[in-house]
Length: 191
Ligand SMILES: CC(C)(COP(=O)(O)OP(=O)(O)OC[C@H]1O[C@@H](n2cnc3c(N)ncnc32)[C@H](O)[C@@H]1OP(=O)(O)O)[C@@H](O)C(=O)NCCC(=O)NCCS
Image (cartoon, rainbow, N blue to C red; front, side):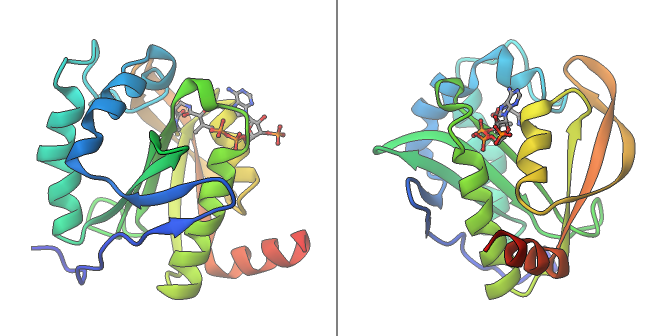
């Protein structure tokens, strides 16, 4: 049993994107976009590679949907022009990570258009302003420039480093905190 109340992953909108709870019917698009070494090489070594033909469906059935139903995570599909082009997975605080955590990926043809930054901004508003989260943590392999920049552009504070088992081996990873207090200050600076 999860210690968290079951709050359904909400539908959120940005200027260009729709974020809605991931669904089983998203499997085909997730399979198409996620089966890409340029994405997977930056992620946890637990993700199977080569990516199996049923990798996305298996992830949804055995991992994503049960965690959402138990109230362990919010998992959003990122929709652009009616197509699923990525995922954001936000874990609630638990024994493995007392502050909760977050992971994300976007289909390669959509990189560097500000999409992930835009999505994380509305998610921060939701978890801090609506749900009253105090903080959550995020990590990225030290060479993952895109992920690092998204964090810098969405109010994360670098708090240290740790070793993580990524697909390219055991790597140094940056550890960041996103806090309600800093999010407020960050947004004020941007206005
Ligand atoms: C990381 C990722 C989600 C970034 O998404 P994105 O929508 O391209 O990010 P944004 O467009 O919001 O970019 C934010 C900043 O990062 C920069 N950036 C994005 N991708 C970059 C890359 N590959 N190399 C260098 N800079 C990059 C952008 O130029 C922008 O910075 P700027 O405003 O100074 O120009 C995407 O590259 C991805 O899915 N990567 C593979 C999976 C992954 O690494 N997930 C995170 C694991 S920790």
